[in-house]
Image (cartoon, rainbow, N blue to C red; front, side, top):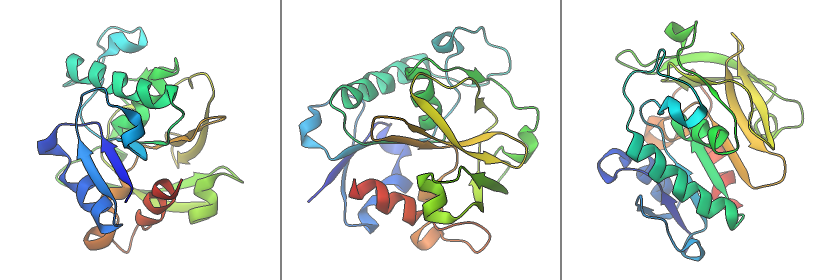
Length: 212
């Protein structure tokens, strides 16, 4: 049976574990640098903001971040990148992928009111790059959930942006040569018992990732 590593804090990853188990996939949640041969892939989960020093900025709009957690997650990501194993970054996880490859961040979006969690996920429209995986899964335009106030800015080396919100905020990325992808939205909160009529089925993306 396939096994996915979730690089997060065990008390904060229940939704990711539940979604993977719904697909028949075993999980382990840990922040220790792993023996990657034990796992089929890595999920970098959502969370708080990211230490601005990791992308060469001083705090200017960032809220709550955990520098130690950020560095532990980047170390786990590095192990999977070096072994060319599949990686899926979700929300903060997508941002960490971009930072790992040398990209940077917008610490606070001008249109954050359309994206950030206020008692519940926001829902908004997006457009996918023609020919991208997301377009193949969901079509050229579709709605997703949203719970963030930061966003990626300049792309890292090898990173391509493949999905955008209606206001231009990047919602999805992939690596040109490695099996690495990221979404700013939360597919684990759009599948199984969390499916909703006003957004896509996140299970389609998770099934693709676990099938890599």
